[in-house]
Length: 514
Ligand code: ATP
Image 1 (cartoon, helix red, strand yellow):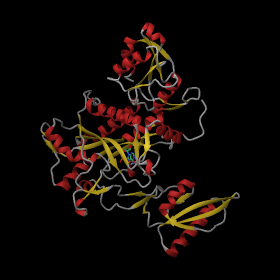
Image 2 (tube, rainbow, N blue to C red):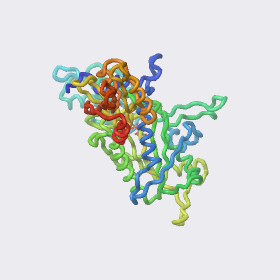
Image 3 (spheres, rainbow, N blue to C red):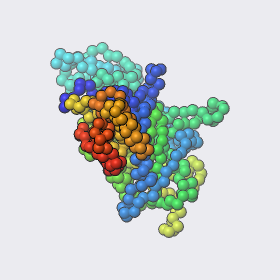
Image 4 (cartoon, rainbow, N blue to C red):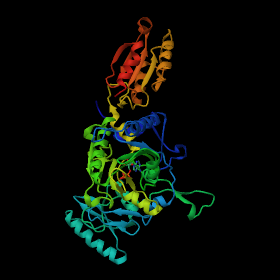
């Protein structure tokens, strides 16, 4: 099984396009950075993952520590909410600037306030480059940087200062990524500790109504979660839930990401699957641990290998001020390997959100616990995952390469999540075979997404289905007409079994639980 030259990521992107999983949005106009469209296979795969999450959260929620099913209800809230929502949540406010953070010094800089200098030096006959940033201005800036540059060059084993080039820090840090130039933060000693510049107001805005002024300004939601907090009271009053209970929601979110990248991993329009779990304050930590474990288990259940998942516990000094515990569930993405990157965040958000909305809306959002004889603002644990990122996980995890197969690239996706479950083929398009195959197709399509294909050689048809991740291919051949059996080919083993026509449904149903 030799590997092709190109990176896994570029092969995934091209397979995704070639087979109609994901296309660049607005491609005929040259595309739009950060936007993607899901094609015929992609939308099936995405819907299957979404439906699995919804089933496992809302329709058949996990069992709690007492062995009884948890109580979780669904919601579909508006993408556009009252603009005060985002003031209360902290999404609008004083954070409308492009910022960079320094991991070494924990300082945060306005990207347009720091200046940058690029210093070249020679080492072992090779010219190397250092990018130095500074928050100072004018003469002070140059003097300070020259001093620092000398020190660093000395440390790097000597060299010579060469001409410098002043650039905006934003451009520089972006460029540095591509050219692998080391960038050193204004107050840092080591290179590579600056994050990419990030806009602190990532929200897209629009106007609701006829007049386009400040009063009519609205935002596209940057997360689905806030809609849940806004309806928390209505849900308590109109359904039979009481803490501990959850409200789950799947839907589009929008963030004007500064640098959308890595295919659908970081886009400007994406889908989230979020659940807010409301509980008594003293139980918050217990539910936080419960949900981290449960969500890791769930990602494994959809086909993610255990060794590709990692729980990253956010250190206490990096937690949001309102959080008592946050863990990122990370996946070993093709572009982070051997390291991991965020797939889902599980945060214990305390009573912060409900208190904020209570204060901003002047509504009481307490829960009156009749049995316990007390009143409290519930605490919240939030497992927030990306549906779009989840689809990328299924593609990355499922991607296989094997030159001995008709289609060297194929996708190993769990049968229950595969976009097309069954390919149905007449071996040849004559001799009564199409009639039997069509009859089978007309029956199975009522239950499963099937594709009928009579074109080209059988090997090519298998290959097409393998690339689409279709777990089963049923072929009607000459023997079918004699003994009423068909072959069922298994995608993963590429082997075939003969199954009698009247047992096909049971055979497929049994395998589909996977
Ligand atoms: P990141 O650190 O990667 O920007 P985040 O911590 O801002 O993510 P959350 O606000 O916790 O993300 O959102 C929950 C989930 O939504 C993430 O774990 C991710 O799966 C998904 N998500 C967030 N931003 C994007 C995006 N721009 N594109 C695709 N998915 C996203």
